[in-house]
Length: 155
DNA sequence: GCCAACGTTGGC
DNA sequence: GCCAACGTTGGC
Image (tube, rainbow, N blue to C red; front, side, top):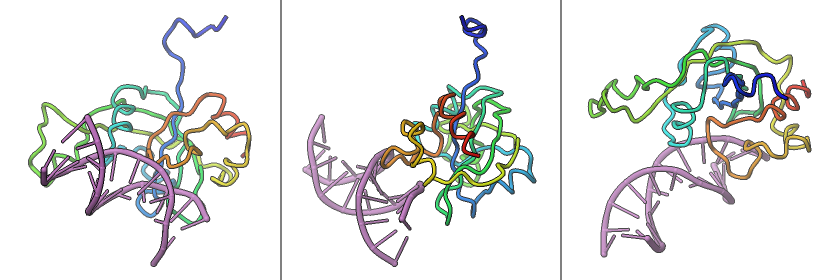
């Protein structure tokens, strides 16, 4: 019997992509906490608004770069709230009925080395990760506990 | 509701 | 820079 199964406090895990040219793990390390703004995809929005909980683990992934892969770990510290960037500049968003949401994450640690996308693809235990499914462009995606552990075991 | 055109993502 | 794979938009 699982000790935590009835308590509603099971941790969930996520993978969040960022282009290092736009926002890198080094930047997160300097900032310590950042709001994950600018996501304009409904699936990712729904996860940030409805599913991500304080304390959840986040794999920080560098995309669109020379060596794409997981580079660090962060923690969700603020659950879904309206993305303030939609109210800046373009005045056509309704603050009472926000379309886009974001979460805050806090830097936990950098990995000793990048766990590259190539390695993840070559690890049979990780074949089920959404990340390695063909054509998946979601910037926020769920990670199972088994995949979280198998991936970090590669470090 | 269908579907072509277009824009974006992201690996390579 | 190329291109595959999406998501979104808009005409019909």
